[in-house]
Image (cartoon, rainbow, N blue to C red; front, side, top):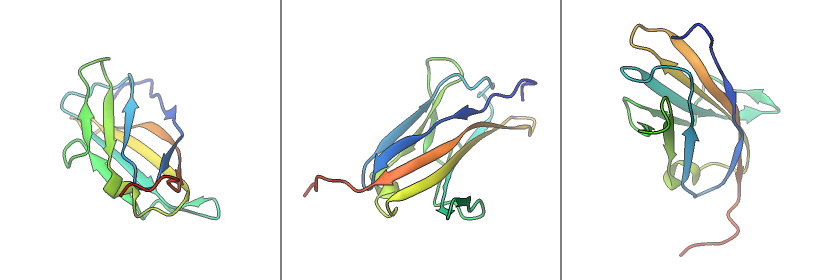
Length: 122
């Protein structure tokens, strides 16, 4: 991994039952040959419960795609089936890149607010 690690603080909101495409630009890490792991964790009274990921996506396991442009960017594909079971509230997200040599860099962290969908699609 690079000597100068960059962690982007990213917060977003999504309605329960919606799809969401999280695009992460220019993370400062070489993505070729790496694995990318993104996870969403619950919070309880403002305490992040890091041992219980509610959603997990990875380049190897699925749900993360390296983008052709800009360089060193990727997307996390969060589907409606991922967000539908989440209760309204605030959650913590974190994303790490594990390089081919085993080095780890946390490239993104932040909060996700899940809201109720106001419009019901039938």
